[in-house]
Image (cartoon, rainbow, N blue to C red):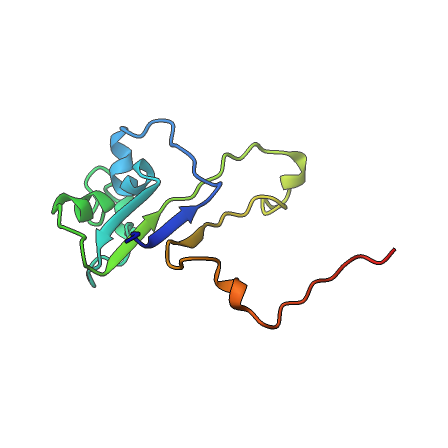
Length: 132
């Protein structure tokens, strides 16, 4: 029996330069590209507006969610995915930095859910050939 799951695919992972700096306690998610925790109603975000007041001892933090070290087997899960971009400023950024090519995304791809490509059984497939 093959184990089924999901693959996370992204080209937008970026490591932080100084991940052990204490100021990152307020944004502990930057230390992980992917973290998985057991779902809890009380853990809806890894950041709080109040974290800016005390970044060294934040009221909400991903590291707090991980400290209980709970089993995630057969549980509802939350996958915390960190995306980032290294931005090199250019003249095209002025007046706004939302220029082409600066978007971030990830794909959640099924893994071993089917024994073969499920589109094989598609009866309405159509092949288009270029005309000469």
